[in-house]
Length: 177
Image (cartoon, rainbow, N blue to C red; front, side, top):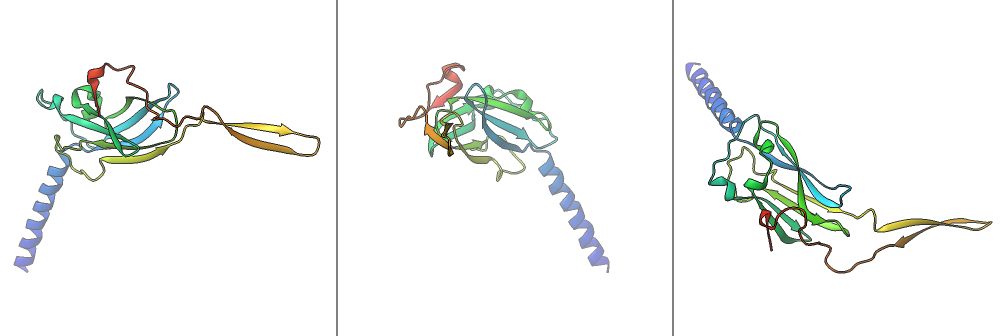
């Protein structure tokens, strides 16, 4: 009976230490990928921990956010260009990328891909989403005395690469490949 109690006590202590260690690390999550009215692609990033993580000067030059568009790596953003609110407990930011939406895209976002910041959970650091351009199709109604028909016509059809060059942020904010 004593051995069982001692084993149970040790297991509880070790479980508490592991839980304490996991809670002392941030947990960054790409929560959503969206297109705002300015037609730039925005990424919602969250820190799900209750830890205030301070960025050291040598970490500011490390890559934190990687964006793949149609399975091609398009940009890497360093920590120094990420809003410091993200590193506070429960921090949430909306990160504006250098890319405009012009047609349907498959976007993959990876946060802390190189694991430069220790986290409690690295399994939730990527998000994949397909974005469709709502302005690319128009609905028109054709009327006759007998029938009304809705026709969808393609507007502004483009078959070249959909990415515009970086515009708003200075060129050193992203390493484009």
